[in-house]
Image (cartoon, rainbow, N blue to C red):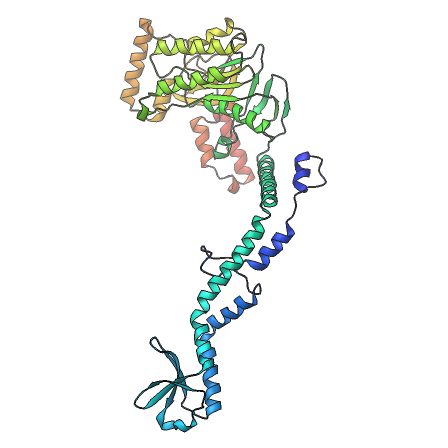
Length: 477
């Protein structure tokens, strides 16, 4: 890293390697130590001669007893001499009376007399017995003592260790950002002190990775502190309003933390904070409804936001009656757009189409909508953001997509017509039906089904041409 000009990378490159501690730990601590430091098995072989000797005794005790037995047989000439053990008397030397007790050496000390045998012990056997029986405990005590010494050596260098760990953690984070940028085709944003937010073909960094058979549709975002302060985003549910606004917030966060961003290009004027009011939740334990939680969060946003903040507001006022909700949504939007009160860059998603009229009444307000169209009785989401307000919420079509029974859908359409004719609900004049499928309509059922059934890896050139011809005919139909 030392060859780079970045101050952060050069500081990481200057990290002390801590070679003395590394050498100590590699020489002292085994690769897979036990969970408990008092159970032994911590030290690597070769670190302590005494620990190695005791381990040899512990692991080869039977062989040592056998070797002692062979030596005593040769010394005494008693071929039937044996070294045995029991829990009462411990280790002993067993000599049959028939072998001739006159051959027993003077240093043998009688331990037990049986009918046909005499049992003895020697000073060497006593020392061996003591060593064998206490080896494990002595090993554990010695290893723990050495471990404490090593731990104290590391503790004396804890500041150096923490500094190195912090720099390695920073490098790990930078490597992760670099890898995801290369793998997912991110671009370097331009971060400046302007009040402008200009994103070309922005994408949601998470959603685009979760889509398997569908291409993510990128969208542009343009906000500033003058004529484009507030973007009112309308469109049907499931069309992608929340995804569009969230991706804008994420791109801003990623850019200001020093990451590349999922976009073709991006100019990010620094914001002081990002506030979001997205999703529905309640707090039953404290007696707060979904609407109350929403209003508490909204109050906190309006209290702490500044003109340099970015606000992402999704369907404010939906938790109460239509007219109350619409009134609250309008008041909040006016407060956010008014430079004398707040004037923050704001993205405001709503189903209250009446708010679209604010574009001509409030300075800095612009209408956008997520495009969708009806194709052969099916609602097709085009996922593209365009200027202007949506012509319809397509709520009944979304309910149909969700699987509501046809009888319920039919009833809902009838009630909607009654509400619109009575003047209670807003009458919406839909755009003229357009049955022509454009390239943006790749999600249309028939074309999509053909594409999903096709295994392009097995197509011959002729079959590929025939398939393309067939799709072209359906697109022109």
